[in-house]
Length: 242
Image (cartoon, rainbow, N blue to C red; front, side, top):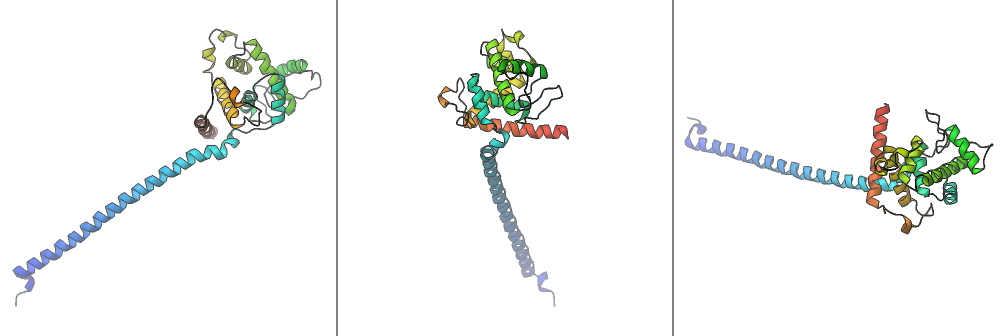
């Protein structure tokens, strides 16, 4: 007797089975693709939410590590004595030594605010600390720094950018007629940014009146940008050293 599958009914049954089989797998494949799309969308959403949290939270929780504040009493005391913005003093300290009173540079600068021995001796005479002074003493270095900044501001018509350039290089006389060029100098730009950060983050600690912080009033978005730029700079410096 012939096999039933050799008949027309058998071929039709086989065709139905095969069609059902492929239809089932087509449905499974479609469901899998849908699941993949849902999973991909969910993963993307999770990554975006996590990125947003990190972007906003990191500056809030780690800003005081990136922009520390120490020796507040002496900074406020000598900033007032020499009529200098305490946030500017903080910016110089951060750039010069990151608040390390024992810092030494390869060029021979020493202490919290990095004075060369000859400049330190000049400031010791000016501030009345001569001849017994210790440039590694925190209070001494802060007074020298505030007094030196005041001298430079007086010498450059209270132009902060020129004063900072002179603090770093010795003088800024060649830029007196074009001070805008000095504002682009990396050392000056960094400290001006730091000054803005300290004015905002530590206005209460530094005794600053927010109304008097001019001409540029900083905001939280700018500070967040400064924090992240400092984080990336730290990472870049780490890889350059390694």
